[in-house]
Length: 292
Image 1 (cartoon, rainbow, N blue to C red):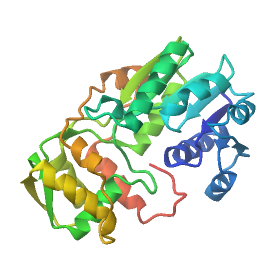
Image 2 (image 1 turned 45 degrees about the horizontal axis):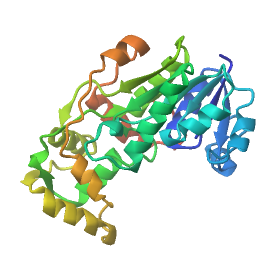
Image 3 (image 1 turned 60 degrees about the vertical axis):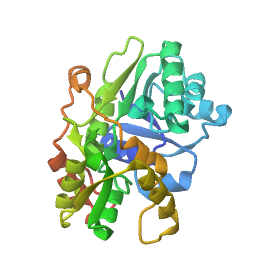
């Protein structure tokens, strides 16, 4: 494998992946909609401009591809398959949002993309990460820390007893790198997650500790007023915007076995405290510093 075509190379996961590949001497062919964003990363590799909604441009950009990683939304899978050379290995990012009890456009797009890949019989895999944290500019852990700086008391449905299993961006990259080396005989699907599920309340406390913040007071709170309050955050500049759908999804467990991830990809994810330490250490480093 001498070169990897990366769709969405200028996005958060794409940049980290490209940096990792280039550090190991693997050439990157960045496929992006906006070449200026790729240029701003200062990474090596001449960008190829393409739009996933314009099949002709995508087909040209992927014409010589042997290994393709897509960090774009999984809803574009069918278009990608149509444009990719028949023998190219496909490594696509989905999301565990596909398991939600409250379907939305994001989750439905992931399901449609997964179905398209499995139906195609193409060689490759769709990796479904849980909540990703630790990338430059990510809006999961960093946004939560911003909220905790302003709210010493945090109301949560059921007091935050639901389970989450966040995965560090570095582990996502390692999973993609491992997937690129696997001899996929056909298309498959695989969940990638952090080492173990944790109650959301404990996750919040861990984020506060890693960010050097005072431990919040967590209060059990009914769902309905929290949904109403979430709608109001878009009008309060002092608070991060929270979508009502995010609050609703907090009431369902997100816990997964990492056995298949470990056995097939050989990737053992970092512990949450270690991942959070890396995350907040990076807050004080230049944007182009490497993940540990």
